[in-house]
Image 1 (spheres, rainbow, N blue to C red):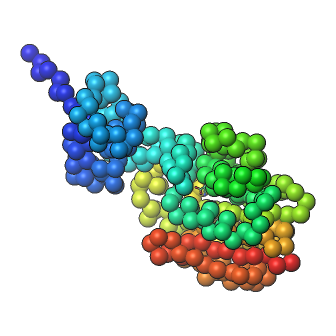
Image 2: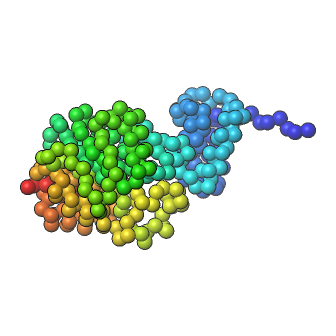
Image 3: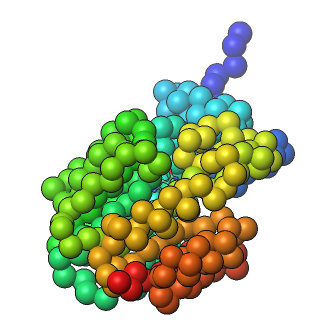
Length: 292
Ligand code: GLN
């Protein structure tokens, strides 16, 4: 005689899965369990705690188990739930785009802080990926016009969906472009007020050392370049033409690239060049102002 299926409550499942994940070395075990179960039950994490006695039905349990199996293989939680929060807003993600990182939120905040005039702002986001930077800028500055480019058509599809999700599709113009060989869009003749980018900056030689969650699942094109400095060089030199005098360049940095990017900006005549740190104290953001 087969045993009757065990009935689980939401909280029992979270606890059991969290300790199982922990034993197996899964990153952020409890958070992973909460996010995956929340996704299946269509509840926020906090609601799981408020409705801790909620029974989990067999069909839900089956879907949850499938996601947990993938998490054990190394899948990032965000690709399993299909979402990541960025500056407090939900962005849809899948394996065509890099998962937005908290450090990148600072890039947006510092970039906007430096822009002097906030009216009729024109912004270029290079390597938009999920569109998290472009969409966040459009939402932060209601009359901003944003051009966003990426080399990947797949990424642009995701980014367009995110712009629609947040109702800014009329102010964010997406197009495909290769930073190294294509013309970049121009939205007004005077030049951009802000060029912002979180470009691929991991040197190929560091690829093997990255966590399996990153290396096995995130798009390599969004992360690596052969030596490490290629995108910075292209962004700095192209920004001299793309920015209006007084316009700001704001780049997310590989911590090891900080000194070189700073020198590059100074050599090209940028003023007020600064390198700022992230929450962990790493050099993470480079800023400069085009003077003439
Ligand atoms: N702009 C996106 C982000 O910051 C994608 C960056 C990338 O793909 N390198 O998350």
